[in-house]
Structure formats: C-alpha cells, structure tokens
Image (cartoon, rainbow, N blue to C red; front, top):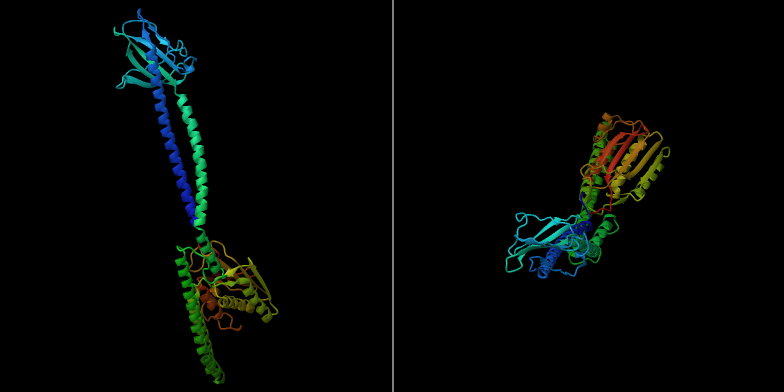
Length: 467
C-alpha cells in the first residue's frame, strides 16, 4: 500500500529506523555484557583454583592434606554446582580431597583431546554434574614436592549464575531502551509535525483555492516554501489572465458574428419560400456551428484552471425553476446529494449542458422529469481522466417514449432530429457531448426506470484532495 502523506512517510521511516537501531544496540550491548560476565566468571574460577592450590600440601606419609577456605558458603552446601577437588597423580596412592558440597559424587572429566590445556597448563570446560547442574570447570596439574609427586586440581562454578546475571541485565537494558525509544519517537514525531507544519498550511491554502474560497496561496511560509508559493501564485495569475483574454476574444467574435447572422435570418423571411427555407436552415446551422466552436475555444482556455467551480444545487434549482414556468403541465423533480456538491466547470457551461437535456426531456415527457446530481462511485471515470479524479454524476430522466439503441446512436449525431414534429435544431445533444468532452467528461443515453430516456452526464467534481 502506497503512503501518500509526507508526514506519515517520515514518521514511518524514523520509527522503523529507531526501532531497528535500538534492537541492534540492545543485542550488541547484551552480547558484550555476556562476554564480559563469562570472562569475569572464568577469572573467578581461576582465582579460586589457585586458592585451593595454595591450601593443599603432601605430608610425610604421602597423603594430601589441607582445608581450603574460599570464603564462599556455596562450596559447603550440597548440590550447588560449586565444588573443588584435589586428586593425586602418578604412582602413589592417597585419598583425594573434595569440598563438602560435592560429597561422594563425581565430576565427569573429558579427555585432553576434547579439552586441551592452554599455554599456562590450564583448561576450562563445561560438564553436567550428578545433580543436573551445568558447571564450568577450571583445571590444572601441579607438582607439590621435590619428589615429583603431583596432583590434579579442579574448581567448578554453576553456570546459572552467569545466565541469571545476564538475564537480569538484559531485562533492565531492554526496559531502559524501550523507554528511551518511545520517548525518542514522541520527540521525533513532535519535531517532524512542527517542521512540516508549513506544508500543512500550504496544503490548506491549495484546498481553499480548489474550493473556490481563495484566489491565491496566502500565508506566512518559511523561505524553503516561499519560492514555491510565489511561483504557484504567479501561475494562477497567468492562468487567470489567459482565461479573461480568451473570454474577451470569444465575446468579441460572438458580437461580430451576431449581426451578420441575424441579417441573413431576416433576409430569409422575405425571400421566396424555397430559397428562404434554404438560407434560413443554413444560417441557423452556421449559428449553431459558430456557437459550438466558440464554446469549445472558451472551455479549452479555462478547463485546466483550478478556479473553475460551480455549486450544483443553486445552479440546478434555477434551471428547474425556469423549466417549471415554461412547462406548467410537466412535473420536475430535483435531487442533489450531498447538498454541498460542486462541479469543476464554469456555471454557464453547466447550465447550457443540463439546460439542453432538460429541454429535450420536457419536449418528449408525458408528465414527469427528474434531475439528479450525486457523487459518482470510485469505479466511474471520465472520458480521458485518471481514476484519482473526483467525479459527479448528473442524470435527466423522463417518462416519454424513450429511444432504442440504434436511435440513440442517431440522436448523438450532430444536427439529427428523430422527431421532425417537435421544434429544435438537432444540435442540443451534440453540444452537450462536446462540452462534456472538453471537460474530460462524457454523456451516456439509455432507457430509464420510467421507460423514457435517461441522459447521464459524468462531469469532473471539486474535491479537497489536492495531494
């Protein structure tokens, strides 16, 4: 899933990085502490081993004697895993010396191949005693007199002491790192939110422009964002000038053509009937063509403007009110949902497209016409736009005879009239199609639920999502 929020991206990256860093640091510190604890444990056993060596001698009778006092009660308590043993080596025989904690039990001894002596003639290994304790053994062999009689000395310590120490340290360490991590994430989040707050202001300013509430990016922006805000404002000003210039040129052209076309229409009335009808029909066609291309030029000049916005409900209410006055025998229903629905097009273009559809519906309806404007579903797209754009669906439906599929195709052709008994030029649906296409929307015709024609317009809507 793609994250669109810049704040969420930065927060996610800092959270992931902080979590990974703290976990790695915790594991590293815990590992280093374990190694240090193991070295300290081994040094303790080595010191105890030489304390035992210094406390044991061989008497005149060749017997081992001595009573090592290591200052640790665990060597006096049975099955603790803390033992010391002194055994004779060589041909002479005598009873070994053992700590009270070992009693008559034996400590397994691996071969020299499995646990060789180091350069100091000491070796360290782990075994399991008769009580099931995992013990670390420190062992060496020492000559005790001038006759060459020697003894093997071993001191053991319970490995659980090291494990308990490391476990306690790790628990405290992880708690401390977790607290530090949570505190760091909160501080980072506050710093990021504060640092990106100007972008939030810029986004809110863009939303106000998109909603038609403002014409410029207004706000006190930092110097990193100020050039962008200035460029956006310059672009909006340039776009506004282009739109105004296009509107002025369209108005001038429409004014210059209005009088010649009106003259042709007037002259057509005094001509002979055959010639007059021909001139009149061609002048009306020319009038429609000129108006259509003027509309297209005007729309093309301003359709990309972010300032194009029309509130649907008041504009459609005006159209329905006019249609009710002109068609007193026809019932007109209006549904706008939600009430604040807005269309991203000029008001006169919206009124022209919907007005044409209402005129057609009123012309063929028996008694009822319904106009609805709703937010389109997420799967609805315009003629050329991407799925990310917001769309509005306007529908005009009547209870007239409706059209068959082949008639719908004919009706969409420019200047085609399926019913010559009804007034009109046959340009209405074509004009609606051209205007909707210029706004990257589309027109669809189908049979409605009342049996009549249903004309559905898909037009771009105004959304506050400017990201």
